[in-house]
Image (cartoon, rainbow, N blue to C red; front, side, top):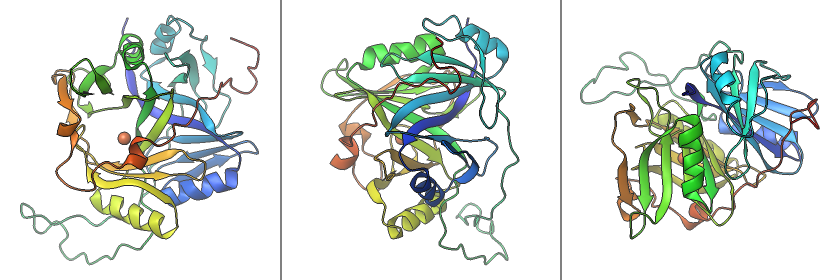
Length: 326
Ligand SMILES: [Fe+2]
């Protein structure tokens, strides 16, 4: 029976210095939700309790979390091979979870009833356009040179030597749909599959997971939505002035249509700011595109340092207090 996926919820990584982790995430445009001696929970300006967890430890990706609509969906998830039982999340935000293991061994948390929070208000300039020239009438606000404003997590990209089996894991067990396949030469020489959530006639982001070809398995990047193109550029200037490493962008993509900009945190994990994704429903056809057709209409052409960025390796993860249990 189909599991009703709601969205990607958060990424959980490990880093050896929580102060440094927090400094980057604040500069990237997140807000602190909570911090303990061993873990940092960061949120955005939207309603998610947290979008990113950093646990103290050697750098690596511990899990990717997806929210489901109800406890019944968690019950269904327990029937997926290798699933844990339903367990309480003994962390800030609470809720319940089933732990799964995807094809490459990365822990997938299916979560339900995690606390929602009130959005944090902030002011963005509305854009005047030819079609709507007075959107910003009598508003002469000047945006300060601050970090961008992260609203929500958008997608995760998993690199793997085995695209086919990894894609099958997400389509069979989580019911995800393939939006676009990128290939080189023959159609079966797949470089990447962009997967979206199946919500029937309800529009969703073009992709919530991307499975990309890589020599080893690991996390390629985590992606976070900001307000608009102004916000992407505000974030770009701020991170650039703060001396962080930039990998690619600002550019508009073909697969998903987003405006995107890519950065690296102090531990080598890649982060993306994006805005303006294509929104499609479950009836949208599966599209095949070559690598050459994947060059967007404007912005920097994809860089080798983005393409060949070292994947963040997976680290085995068992929730605190459950050590030794399945
Ligand atoms: Fe991305």
